[in-house]
Length: 174
Image 1 (cartoon, rainbow, N blue to C red):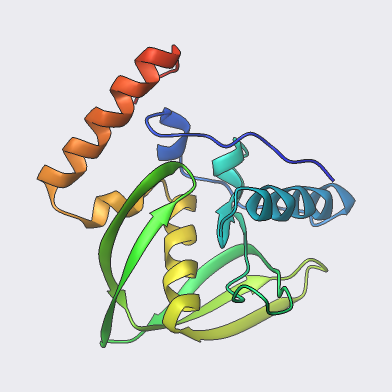
Image 2: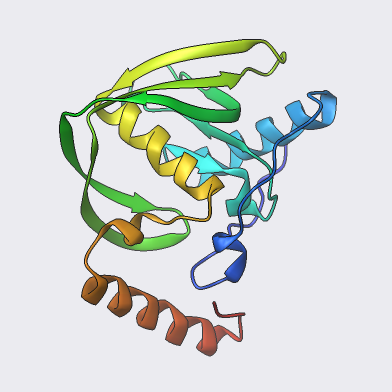
């Protein structure tokens, strides 16, 4: 398959809300494979289609540990249908905001309804790292970045840093 270039902050496409996939076909499955190859190559544990410039509601992830067998998951049109009152904090990073990490508080457990690669409706109950990763990637589909969950002061510093770097590269800014 093909490794795709990643969209990096402050590119405005990262703030775009992704649209649902109406049909799941060979092209959709090829996109999922490209996304998995891109995610593994980066390396990362999750990737939303918008991060490779495709504004569609699809994400891939694999939270298996190093040395374990890979367990790639594909979520098409994912929707959080329930979340716990209990909260958890994880240090998050993002392939679209390279080399920046911050602690983010989110619901500790969630239930997600989605379509799999074959178009079958599925439901998954997730907690721990899987729940955090799913929430992070679903946020991407809604134009939300993990830095939106940290203080305005820290967020503004990150955006300034990446905007300055983008100007140096001659890239688009938010």
